[in-house]
Image (spheres, rainbow, N blue to C red):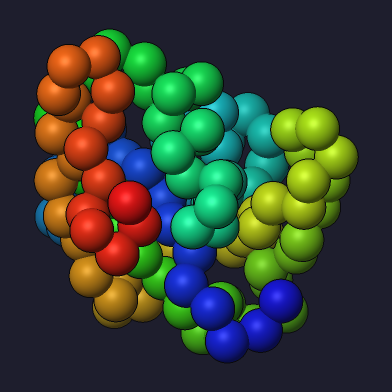
Length: 115
């Protein structure tokens, strides 16, 4: 799907390493699966609930699908929904914006543009 923003949730240490080196192959689950997991705006809150429940210190980063080229594949995952998966290294210059993703009252507090 072209011309849209997709999102990646980073743990604090993952984000710090990404900022320090300017590149990443993702979190341990990304390394295991062989691609970097992303979510769409409609999917990211459920991703946070399912994979980051109760975790504080997270960073949400936005990326543009068009910048990912052919290395970005849309593949079925949770419930058959198509999720964006990146089959290459992610570079810091591709980040459109990032925000902290605070934990409040049991769930993560997303920026207004995703609420």
